[in-house]
Image (cartoon, rainbow, N blue to C red; front, side):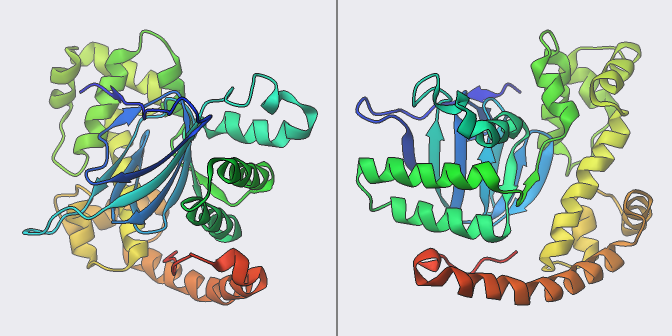
Length: 312
């Protein structure tokens, strides 16, 4: 499975790209541009590098160049795709080769450089960026440019984001001649919900077990089985936080063959049971909601315009 290199078409009289993407979303791909993605409609599974998570309306992610990614939309049986995303893309030098190099942009430059693993925004920053992006839809070209500068200002000072892909994943993609390990990881990310055996990876990489096992461990810092477990547990944590499915359903949806094994492996990695993890998340949400409402009130009508209720 190869990563598609897909690029949006930039109009000749525009310095950056503003694009509304509708169903179906593009497949597993990458590109040299930075990308800010706001999901305005739809829900499903988001894959950024080796990070798998659930997404829904108002999900906001920023991606550095060449990090592979995909949004896989949930479709109920008998229903049609119904998804939409608002996308901003720009090249590092779209404002000239000195813009991000000036002393005043030291923090912004650091933010961009470290975005190679992908960011998911939350909190105050998320709401403010969404507000700006929603207003950009009706702006002329010049106003859109200045609106992007407002987003850059938030980029330069915020700490309200989660880093997505692991350092090992980014390192593996920066090392030339490592195509077989990239192929192995792509296979895992596409099929982690299914029954995967090491023989499947030997088949897609055309390697022997004696060659594959140490190569995978050297590249990603752990064995294939440990890495697969990490991906499955990470995905199950998001499903538990969403609080919409029974724990047994989450176990099977995350790739575990039975509930007992899921409970055992989850506690081994997280130190608590899945049910306890869910209850702790509920308690944390109750504590956070009053502060969230206070922040929305402080921003006033202008900052909150065009923002739907966000399910954190």
